[in-house]
Amino acid sequence: MNAAAEKASWDEAYNFAYLDEQTKRMIRRALLKAVAIPGYQVPFGGREMPLAYGWGTGGMQVTASVIGPSDTLKVIDQGADDTTNAVSIRRFFKRVAGIATTEATEEASVIQTRHRIPEKPLKEGQVLVYQVPQPEPLRKLEPRETETRKMHGYAEYGLMHVRLYEDISRFGHIATTYSYPVMVNGRYVMSPSPIPKFDNPKMENNQAIQLFGAGREKRIYAIPPYTSVKSLDFEDHPFEVQRWPQACALCGARDSYLDEVVLDDKGGRMFVCSDTHFCADRQEKGHRGPMAADPAAGAFARSSDTSARKEGER
Amino acid sequence: MSALMLSETVTPKRQPLMRATGVSKSYGETIGCLDVSFTLNPGEVIGIVGESGSGKSTLLNVLSAQLSPDIGTVEYDLRHKGMSDIFRLSEPDRRRLMRTDWGIVHQNPRDGLRMDVSAGGNVGERLMAIGARHYGEIRAEGLDWLAKVELNASRVDDKPRTFSGGMQQRLQIARNLVTRPRLIFMDEPTGGLDVSVQARLLDLLRGLVRELGIAAIVVTHDLAVVRLLADRLMVMRHGRVVEEGLTDQVLDDPHHPYTQLLVSSVLQV
Ligand SMILES: Nc1ncnc2c1ncn2[C@@H]1O[C@H](COP(=O)(O)OP(=O)(O)OP(=O)(O)O)[C@@H](O)[C@H]1O
Ligand SMILES: [Mg+2]
Ligand SMILES: [Zn+2]
Image 1 (cartoon, rainbow over the protein chains, first blue to last red):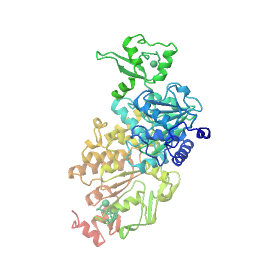
Image 2 (spheres, chains in turn cyan, yellow):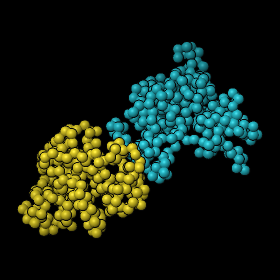
Image 3 (cartoon, each protein chain N blue to C red):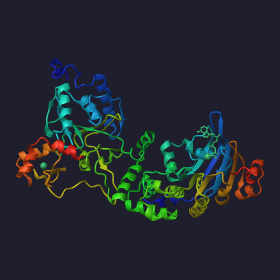
Image 4 (spheres, protein in one colour):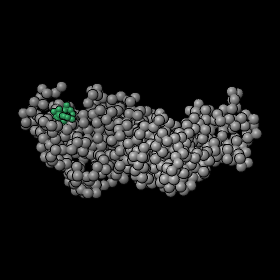
C-alpha cells in the first residue's frame, strides 16, 4: 500500500477503496475471526456503501477491506463479467482504488461474485468474495435470531434436514437448487449464498480463500483454503449436482453450468456456459459447440447483451 | 438411527424419575409457585389442578426447564448419570434432554408445532435432530405415529394449519412421542376443544401413556381430565400445593377445604 501512496492512482476525493481505514480494520478483524472459525457467522458493524442493498454491499465492503493497490479485480454476476451490476462494481473499484481489473479468472487476485463460482479452478493466493443476501440457512424455518444462534452454538442442526425432508415430501427429490446448505469443517452449517448447487462441490478443498459478506444482516463468514465442505443430504437421497443432456452450444463444454438462452421469437434456443469468460476462453482455444457456426448463436455470442437477457429471465 | 435405541434402558430398581424440592418462582411481587416438593416415579401420571392463577403453569414450566426457579431444585434421572439437577446441566445438555427424553405438549398448538412444516416433517424433526438421515425411515416412522394418534396417513404432507384443533393436539403428541421420551409435560392438553373431541383425545392419551409406560405431568383445571389420566393428584392454591394423594382418594374424600370446594364443583366452570 505504501508504494501506491506515493502516487495515488485513484480518485483522491475518496480514501483508498472508499471505506475509511478504521472501518476496514474492523471488517478485517471480523474476517480474521471468520477464517479462524470456518462457516461461523461473525457480526460486524457494517457501513453504508453508495449502492442499494441487493447490489452486494456486504461483498463490496469485504472487497474494499481486503484489496490492495497491486490487486487485480474480477467481478462476476451470474457467471457474467458484463452485467450492469458487475460492470458498475468493477468501475466503482477502479475509480476509488485505481486497481487493475480483468475478466480472466486466472489473472484475478480478488474475485467478487454474485451467484456463481468460476468454472476454472481457483489457485492459492486468490480470494473469492461472495455477495450474500441472507446469511442464515435456518432462517426460513426458524425466524427467531436468539434461537438460530443457539442452534449454531450447540450444533443443533436437525431443522436443516427438516427443510430437505419437506423438499422430498413435496417434490419427490431435494428440489433446492441454489443456496443449498453445506456443513463446513464438520461443524457449522452454512448458506453458500445463492450459487447453484452445481457449484457446491467447488467450495470443498478449494485452494482460494472464500469470504462471504452480507450487508443488510451485517454478517461475515469464510471458508479457508483446503476446508471440508459437505452438502447436506439423506442416505437414500444423496446430494447431486445439476446435469444437462447437451454440451454448451458455443464451446462444447460438457462440465460447465449452462444457461438457457432464447435466440428468436420462433422458439429457437440454446444452452450456453453461464461463465462467460470460461466459454470465450474455450472458443478462443478452438473448442466448438454444435451451434458455434449458427449465425443467430454467433450474434448472441458477440452481443454484450447476454447479461440483459439473463437478468430478464430471473 | 432408530428411536428404539433410546428406549432400551430399563430402570434397574424403582427409583424416582423426577424429584422437586422446595421449588419457588415469583414474578416480582406476584407469587408463581411456592415451596413445592414431590417425587414422580417412572411411568406415573401426576395431575396438577387448581383454579386460574394458582400457579399450575408456572410449576410445570419450572419442572420442564422452561423457567428457572428462584429457589429449590428439580432433579431428573438422567440415563447415564442418575439423579441430576436439571438447572446445573449445560444448556446444550438440557436442550438435548428436552428434545429426546422429554416431551412437552403445549396448550396452544402454535407453540408446539411448526405450522409451516408438513405433519410428517413435524413428527420427523426430533428423529432428524438426533441424527436420523434416512428419508424413507423417517417418513415411515412419521406415518406410523400419525396412525398411532389416529391421524389419516393421507394428511402426512399437509401443513398443521389445515388441521382442526383436536388434530393439531394429536400431531403435537405424535411429534413428542416419536423419540419415546420417558416423561411428557402437558399444559391443558384438552383446553379449547369440543367436549366430544376432548374425550377422544383423553382416551388416546391414556392408551398411549399406558402402552408406552411414559410418565406424565398434566396440568388442567378440569377434574374429569385428571380422573381419567392421573394416578396421583396435586391441588394448588395461591402457588402452594395444598393437598396431594392418589387421584381417586383426593377426589372422593378431599381433606383440604379448598379441595372440597373444588370437588363440589363450585369452582368449576
Ligand atoms: N410471565 C408472568 N409475569 C408475571 N406474572 C405472571 C407470569 N406468568 C404468570 N404470572 C402470575 O403468576 C401466577 C400464577 O400463574 P400461572 O400461569 O402459573 O397460573 P395457572 O394456574 O397456570 O393459571 P391458568 O389456569 O389461568 O392457566 C398468577 O398470578 C399469574 O398472574
Ligand atoms: Mg396455566
Ligand atoms: Zn461454453
